[in-house]
Image (cartoon, rainbow, N blue to C red):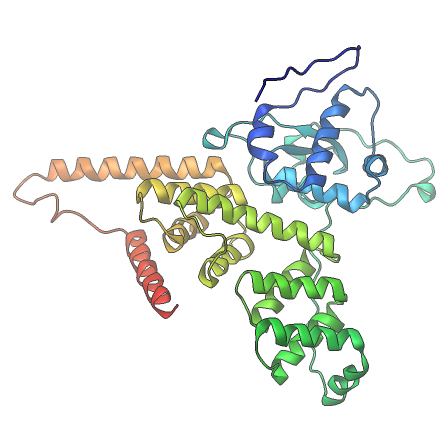
Length: 385
């Protein structure tokens, strides 16, 4: 094919985009998220301030859409939020990018900077500003956090037989039950029926969102209502209330899986039940960011080339959680402590002398025991499948 040249005829201005963004960050991101980032780059040349509402108007989106995009890029260590001395959002900072295999030593704990309350606790780290006097407090608009906290999940009520029977006249409800029985290839039990009612009536999932929830669980090969309830509760906590929001969330999960598969050399497209359970544990229960989970996968692959697996990664992340690891710097500090300890043990063995061999003097660590146990569990799980 003949080569072509890209040029311009006039005096238009242009924004400079990092090639790292194009090569690594843009490929896995939602299209709307990419547009928001590009517009933020464009705004670097704009002298006046701008609001989230104005950005939303520019794209004909909602403010929640813009907030989700910003939250996504914070999680990828592409953006950072700045707050003033009163804990109010004052700016968005575009961070320097780098290739995945040599990420910059930046702040990787995105969760801690997503809420106003966390920002207030970090006031010592930012420039404190004197809060101006408010002449007319009654006219001051209420301040809504840019990223609200997780919603408290309502308890699962006991549904009476009459409540279940009343739903038979609801066409939307009938469609949901039909889809669950069809896609899960099973008859709905009374307990499953209560689970579906809880998602439909108490968590208030509309038909479109509920149908996608069913499809999502089928895609992940989790054809049971217990797992579907867990996913629904997770979405509820994260304020996911529309089909679009749910699809964006699932893209983030599959993006993490893709990164882990790449590190481990796995060529499958869909995860196993065990792998999804691990993903849910690492991201929701242990609270690790995608970057730290991917780093753990990379370390597992380097330690055990060709044989690293999810249980082995779990052992690494369990150890990090035990040692309160939250950022890349924490990992580096833990590695340095471990290396120092190993060097000391080697020196102690050398100084001990005598006829004791290095093998006899070897002491298996607790982490080694845990990883060995995880391997056995993994072998049993594979055997069941």
